[in-house]
Length: 277
Image 1 (cartoon, rainbow, N blue to C red):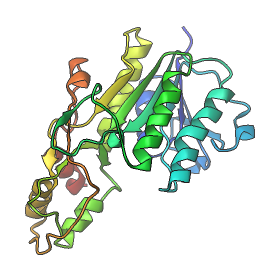
Image 2 (image 1 turned 60 degrees about the vertical axis):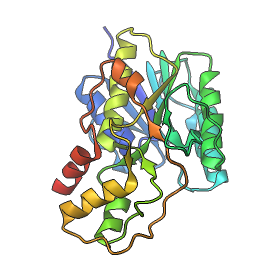
Image 3 (image 1 turned 180 degrees about the vertical axis):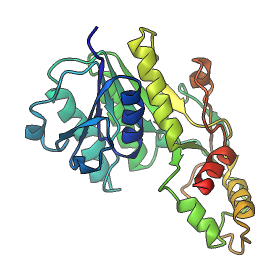
């Protein structure tokens, strides 16, 4: 039986972690990015620019394609180029349709700000450009012509993503009131979710078009900050920290129902691992 293969387009932090796991599981993994010098062992580098169609002219045929880019420029134009234009360029360049396409999206597609629970069927009426462009990209994925799944990740944290930790170290946190729920997922769980769904696809299990991937405990951001302050033995003296508007609770019930188990089911396990490193 030929070795099954995966192409990870935009093989950055999450993509590299995913690629290593898939390689260790015996799959042939291709990582596409502009600079392939940073790819870990086990991933075959494909040096290309998703914004330049001519650089995508010699892609391998793969069983699975994962589109896991990160916008290098946090502007409307940057998001459009990364998530929509690059996706269209890649889909046109594929030599043959894959068995399944995976697209990493974001919970920015949700607009809810009333502490309500959201899931895969909740209304998506974002007001910000990031959520609107993510929805455009999801539309491209749903109409690509072959099986595809969107994975909506909540706020990703982990090694190298230390904004909240650094804020708390400075003694700064969000106020207790008004309550602002936050949702998060550890970088390693992002990779685990994708690996799990890829393996289910390759094993012939049907997948749904959308999964929401967030840990088990949506938590007010001030509670997370207070817990971190206790771990760091830091006193919070400034309660003026602000975060982007919105307060919702992301449900992972559908993902959990497939049998997936989180490595870090809450911020406590996840941040404990980050602090231990």
